[in-house]
Image (cartoon, rainbow, N blue to C red; front, top):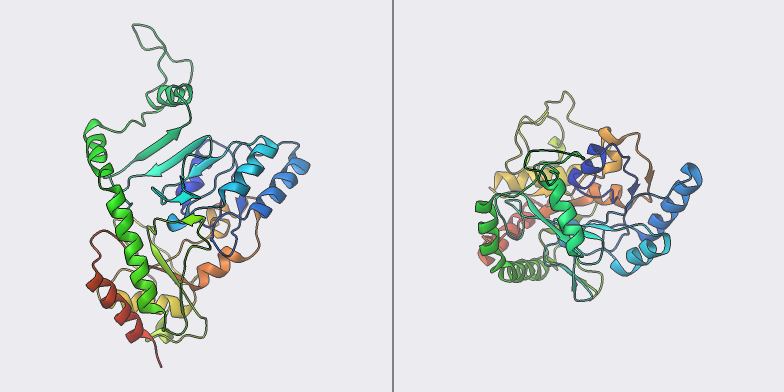
Length: 335
């Protein structure tokens, strides 16, 4: 499973009693490095006598992974691909929609995604047999008797009809939302092109057709931001970003793997301007909960975590908002 991602990519593996094997990223797409993936597969086989059970690439912030190389590795070793396209709804690789390459594809309809059912998501299956088997497990795995009999442990993972109805309506505006996100990305590119020390993350080539669910930038380490001298001086008391729920309080404001001080200073400065900007995902192989999990790393995701930050890009972000956001970034930079 990709390391540079949200915990939802790896936690289901742990829920099932399996062990996640973390794979670092390639520098251009920020997604799973196919060369490291194959190295990990061969190394696990030599150490355990078994191949991994699945390959889980992630469409980070909507950017496609290299489907050609990953699927070739899948075919070579007979390991199924489960696409985590939660952030990549509508993104395409060489014109084909993400989630339709592997054995299964996973989409998210959380409140902050391209379209929403308020929560939950969708599973893309290749055939009716797979779909029926999945739905059997998703509805308590009941056997065909006039009473409840179970020969397997099932779950209650159905989406309610109300949420599904909202989702069907949302599907009709998916393309409009994708077009808007791409427009916001283009506007950020135009407005940030002359801002020294700021680089907008873009698709490496025409093969990568991202929905740009979030627009992300990296900050040069030498860039100075207002308030940078106060970064990480105080412990955070509230969750950063969105409806994050209850958080676990900590005693120390720093960890051994965190964004650079100028990134944290920019986050704080933007928040003072009523703009929510967040650090990029902390790599899973650097999360304390996964400290003992095998990881095949090249330093890419850790380096990006130090310098990356996400900017607003949702359907309510107007051109005027983007100009205000970029003006605030410029204001934050110490000349």
